[in-house]
Image (cartoon, rainbow, N blue to C red; front, top):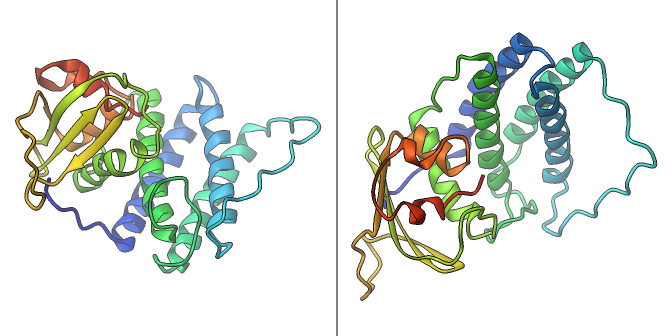
Length: 248
């Protein structure tokens, strides 16, 4: 596995690029074909992140009491404006926080604001791709961001138990990003999973890949996140092992 060196500045730059592009695609498409749901869900998520990440504590947030009646969906111009404001506000909030600022997260990782600076950057990039897909003009996720997104799936989503693929398989999967000079080795042990760094770990197990998936970093990430089929990648070996890495 090649080392990735993403930073707060890197993730915030991605947010500043993908946030407006997402709003443009949503505005172009209008409230039809699921875009209204995407807009409402993302607006609520960003509002929650802003409230959670600024608490300065690492304990799990107390769930809000359910509203007695669901609030009516806002009219489309108001919903679009709310999304725009939440994206802008979230960027400002994350920009103001030191990456080491204490902040709860749902993964088996240090409870720091850096988690959310990374997570929101990837969430916005994927939602941007979703909205552009509906508009019929999806563009790939930027190469370095997509490579970091693949790493996020492997070091965050899967260890946190957010795996959607089969969990009864054993073997080693090699992922190769053709445009990013990155590769990842992942060992599946049934429900268990280990991200291997073959450059530094002494391990007597055979690292020979039982499955290999090759594609651009964007295509690898979109496949792992359920946006593309794994058979759209160049596959070798048992394709079920690649499908076992899906988290979306």
